[in-house]
Length: 369
Image (cartoon, rainbow, N blue to C red; front, side):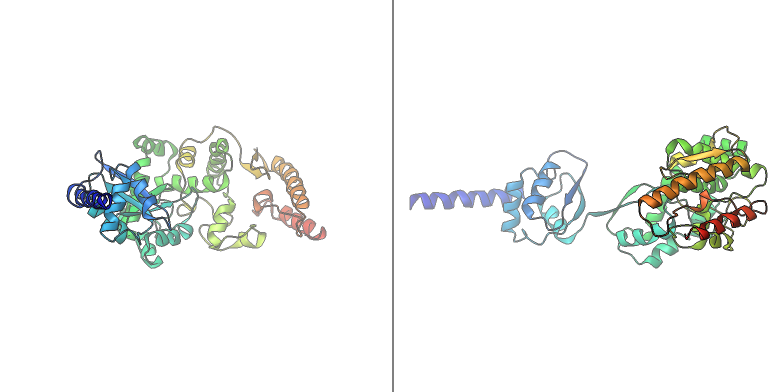
């Protein structure tokens, strides 16, 4: 009986300590701390994370405080940012109300607005139309001197963490600001050397981003396209056809090359009106500082590398070698179409090569592809 009374006294003392002495205290240190509360996590898991981050000084005492307050259940999962020194009452309120939750999104290099917009809307919890409107922000377009109706290419690929309640417009401004921070002042001088605008370089960089599979080939691919521009040759870049189609296709076929769009560089000379995707820094640098090579052609191989050549005769030979490798891959995979040759392996469709292209197409039909 004495032990029972002693236990009650100790418990009462503990309750008083928690409610009176500790409830108003936060954790150690200063600054902000990020805490992840996994989906379905208990308060015990959350409290341990809070203690490790220095938001609360003692996880056990914090759980007891939450239990006494009747708020030890139904906490919301998410990534929270807490200011160290925040009171336990405020921490509990945030965990239950979702206040302080951050939303993160990773934009891979080479993503287009068609991919970015729905993902950004999902992460922000906002309608797709709101994001679509935000990427047409006329003030940003004017500030960047972008001649296209959208910010395609200027939402820099990176990982972003947005606080709860961030609007689509605010998020887009942050992503454009990231692009501006990446762009170096000395690059403006290089633009003059190339006789290109920033939009020109970004348009080229986006194509390089989509074409390159090996980092070391980026400056060479950029050089190929710049060499073509210098002699008035069409770029004939397959990624621009994909963009002009407005949808992803497994293979770019001859029928796709006639798509009527200023972005289709098989049909229209020069660079497209703007970027077809968001290029990363390496592709931008490669486009600003291309390799000093004479190549005007390249062909893709299954392992991701390209063979570069200076004239069409060499290119035709390289195409045959590449096609054999692509056919071998298709055969090994028991593909019903047998040929997985991408359009970049096939000869172009300019006036000088149309007959060759048709001949190649006939050859494939005879083989049953």
